[in-house]
Image 1: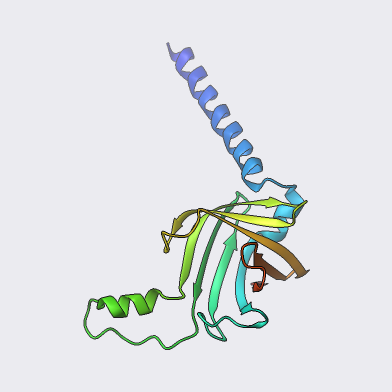
Image 2 (image 1 turned 60 degrees about the vertical axis):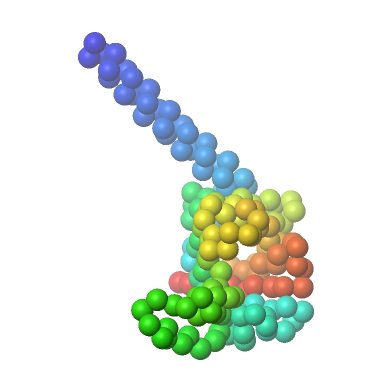
Length: 165
């Protein structure tokens, strides 16, 4: 009986390791070298629409985006605007709407398609429930420390990110 238990435990460990290794490659969906270029923490430099500051988020929005080596990501973007305090401990509906307007936050996994030069964020959790689950972005590296993401559904919008070291 003890031998069967040990064999079952070893089999479970092998299956877990095999699954983790397989998921890591499947989630990244690209060569390890391509995926390594994304891994890290990036600070938002700018968001432009038609070459102008994004009207919803203002001239100097702030944000961070994270990519890890296992294929997970998270992003938060806060608009450039005054942040008034709520009149009481709970926001009114108008105050809550004002706080959320222009704010972006989601997390999930990501895949890279090197041939198409696209990066897809597969959103698991999102502050905006009406957004599509998958957000496809064209990507371009200006240098190893600057990344430009362009939503495929809105090619006139660009988000420029700078690697935090």
